[in-house]
Length: 91
Image (cartoon, rainbow, N blue to C red; front, side, top):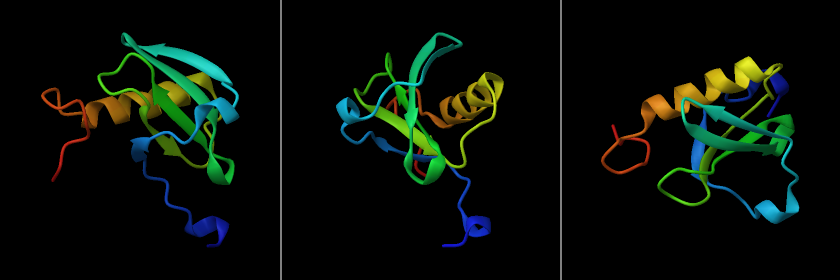
């Protein structure tokens, strides 16, 4: 896949083995705590630390350029969460 063909959509799921990836930043966004780690393809993996499902989160690529962009990514993810299930809603 060429660089210009990268999918910039969030990919939800359970994080890979986190012990092997160093936390690069921790962010609290509107009461939701996230750990940020390097992701595949130069992106970032976000793990929802205080969410209802251990290890649940999402990845974005390319990596955000600022803490505010990370916060925007997290807010977009949280906006998709179904409050009844704690997972992204099915369409």
